[in-house]
Image (cartoon, rainbow, N blue to C red; front, side, top):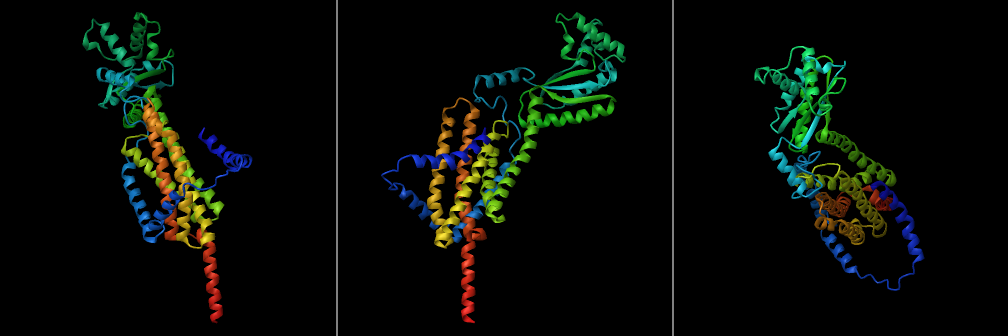
Length: 443
């Protein structure tokens, strides 16, 4: 949807807007009632980023904020940062009920782990039963695990019941036939048809282990997966032909989603930056232009992650689209300012005045655009009953504000301090020609 929106802008801006201006009658009153705002922007710029010291201060502040942002970026988690549903408010009945269940019972979040053998009936092998039980014990070393169930526990209970409920018989038999007999006894004595199906498959070559947890936070899932992978290596090394596979349930699905998000995130965000850099570099035929365009976007993205880390917002399937939209908006503002500065340089031949004129004109347009976009989402912060919508609105508003401020300050400041060749090209050429002419006359 976001891609279609971005693609549609090409037609609406380049074709529909000029067409509408052509068809609509020419306005009778062309007086600019907002000149005061533009004059104010120009006046502020002339005293800040248009001056070398002011521009240098802006760039130093950018580096300082980036360094401070890195401190909070390390706290950003790949997944949910709070228990319960992130879509609903913390005081919603569902989240309150989930907390009550987790306080009173083993846990509402399940992880399913599959134990598989190569041959049919392999689960009945005593060494396989022992390996499954050992895997369960390994997982129980996590203090957050509320409980677990698997076929070895069933076999132990049935064995005890068949021996007058003597606790000394709550053990696993040492041969496959006895294990199979106990499993059969459980199945035929149960009033529920197919009672063993939740533990083993009909071919008895696959067994299901269930683990109950209190939440599916990113920290919990990372710890669970690391522990399960370690237990998997131990079990498979000790029993030939046994494989342990992760994992189903809400924990397993969320873990898989988090891993996919991490992989995609580490690829997509750098790819977006590289693509933006390449396109701008090719269009303006300048590596410096490409760097100048992505610099505000890098800063805004870094500040966004710092904000997420500071306020405990994780990178999830809910927040990734918001981040993607915010990153896409950032490059627009930077292009507007840089291109306007180049145009003004052709006219005024002075970088300071070019920056003042650019911020006074384009800065007004960018401010209005950012305010319009923010107004479209800010109401969700106060009016939405869904926590996801309000959090997304806050995050998107923050990104839009930071993108606009970064483009309005960093691009002009960089141009004033470093005077890029692609911005100063004609002026430098004219100065060089004038110097050559002066030398020729002196000779």
